[in-house]
Image (tube, rainbow, N blue to C red; front, side):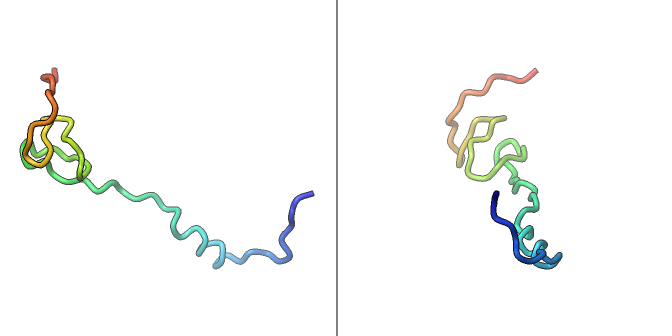
Length: 62
């Protein structure tokens, strides 16, 4: 048999434990070249640039 709690966990204590479980929206920034919304510190998947330097060859999207 597993461990059993000696006392009931109150709503307040349960809520404090769950305080950091909420999902957050991703922090999107605008690509300076194509103005698409991308995650920061990543290569833009639409134009292939990172910090003003072309690092990927991107095919034209239909």
